[in-house]
Length: 54
Length: 387
Image (cartoon, rainbow over all chains, first blue to last red):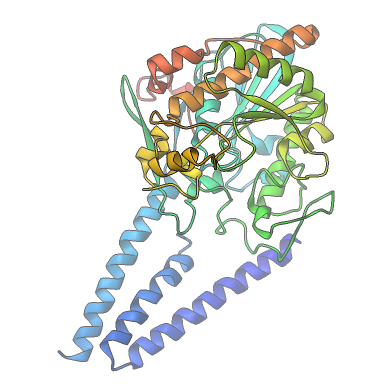
């Protein structure tokens, strides 16, 4: 059971990293300042999670 | 404005926000609480000395052991089961820092679920720390959550199937150290923690286990002793003595439900020789209808919204403009445990436990809590530990 949970935990972090990359990509691509601000704010919890701070 | 410059500015702003938030979270997670053990400390073990199930985990707590000069019974005190209930670990630490066992043994763990004390409840804007003034300065503790943080125990199951009963419980209670008793060595963090604690209770041949808690006034199990059937005579007598002689607000006594699994008062009694007790006291900070959620509310227990609910008879505990200050809540827990020991000594003299050095109810109310926590800066190094 512990091993399954460890695997899911790792997958969870990979998913978080995937979404962070997707948000960064959209941030780079957008020409709309309001959208860029939104993407930047959305990045924060993903960064904190990947750094294991929250 | 140039779009690239605007994006860089936005990114800088978001980075500063992330850095500030991250540093605050990190400070909270890494803060070490100093404990000055009583001079009568016999030894300090780690929970992993009793079971490898918690070795290398954040919940491998310090176990403070105080052996009296005369043989007698053994009492185990569990603090910090739910770190959003600060009086639980404060009550335990009052014993760790002041106890002088005359007969029998006392074993204290100030924080059994350290993981839950390393993050506050998400979306509730809880304070990260709380402080108590002492004669030598201000002492600080981590405030926390009810559950172990997902950083240490993840993912939660869709439905938490309690071991060994097979009862279905709420998914997040797999991270609740009072829903995972008696635990299992290959489970998730809280199951392993409770398994190691059960091993401690069994190997140390504990006679009494006390689990300190607090509860919202909207909750029916309030200002009471919840007890396994093995301790019902003692709890009933203690409840009557405290209500008639000491407390302004009565303390009740309730039987541990046989059909509700995972709780300390049920499973410890069922899976060891010990009689298990759990005490609750009113903490307005936990009420859903509270006002501003800050350290002032946590420590004073004063809230006009909770009081208003009381006026409409929506609460299970009285509350007035004096609130439920932390001194009163702690004093109730400390005095309840001492009264339980006193009654137990009468009913089971062969398991007598006599503890001295512990302040009584009126002394805590009069002197405040700070008088009973010692200065780690001036204490001998061999008596200073960190939880």
